[in-house]
Each structure stands twice: as structure tokens, then as C-alpha cells.
Amino acid sequence: MSVVFQTRQFRVGNSQAVRLPAKLAYPPETELTVTRVGEKIIIEPKEETLAGFVEWLKMAGSKSKGQEWERIEMDFPERDWK
Image (cartoon, rainbow, N blue to C red):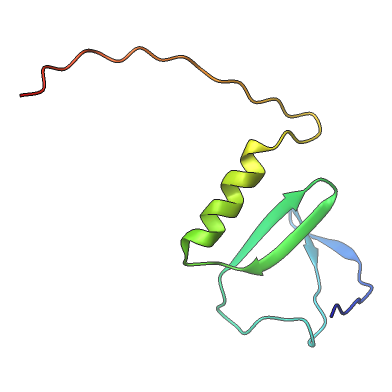
């Protein structure tokens, strides 16, 4: 189920801010993660699990608009494992 509210952005110093309605707000002192996926901006509580890291890896691996990823070959010194 989704809930939709209309709001506006405003400037605070050199940053943009968005006022969240009380029904959508997180408790005070909640650490939040802000993610941009295409034109969408997602605000969610910070995850302390590896699931969030896995999602980040999936997003980083996908080609986004105007973003190219390439593999960089690296040389590693040989080691004498005994």
C-alpha cells in the first residue's frame, strides 16, 4: 500500500530541503539513507544489514543514464606462498 502526499522543495543555505508530512516522518534521530534511482529519490532508514549493501551493489552494477562502468585491469605481484 502506498500513500502519496504533495510537497514542495525549498532552500536552506546552499542545500535543498523537503518537508515531510507528520504521517510520513521518521522518529527523531533516525539515520536515513538517500538514494537516487534515475529520476526518483528514495529516503529510507539506514539499514544495518548486508541486504542494503547487496542492493547498492546491484544498483552500482547497472548502467544508469549517463553513467558508464568499465573494468580496470590490475597487475598484482607474485607471492611465494609457503
